[in-house]
Length: 159
Image 1 (spheres, rainbow, N blue to C red):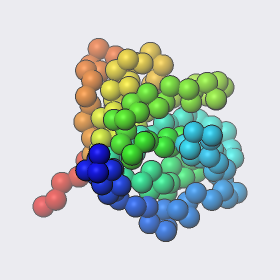
Image 2 (tube, rainbow, N blue to C red):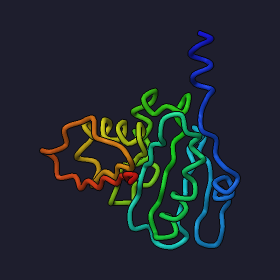
Image 3 (spheres, rainbow, N blue to C red):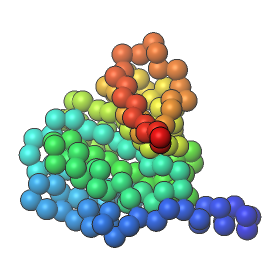
Image 4 (cartoon, rainbow, N blue to C red):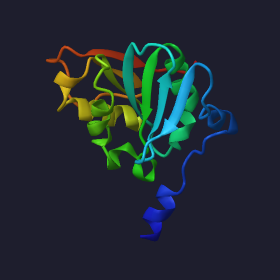
């Protein structure tokens, strides 16, 4: 138990600049749901929505600048809190968020690293509810080849 506690509590913390993106401004309203998820809602018309699963052992607030940047482009972003900073412990975190915004038609899942893999795993059982998947330095753990999902996979390599 001590080993598990130590493992879960050793994670990458959000920097101050990331935490500053949790503030609302004239373009994006930021608020937190009862379950701890952050919502980045554009002040203008919403063109699509993304549920973003954070990377393993990364404080989820670290992704606030990316969520805010997408929201500034008209995309509603939902950033769920994952237990122990591990998306594998709550693969179904996305299950109720679509119901909160029934007027939004275009929905995507996205995630970084382990979060991307778990988003893909969730999508494997919900392909008819989403339009696509965005993987940031991640790979799909589900075979989505028979679906109509659009998939964008971004990764970097060092020289």
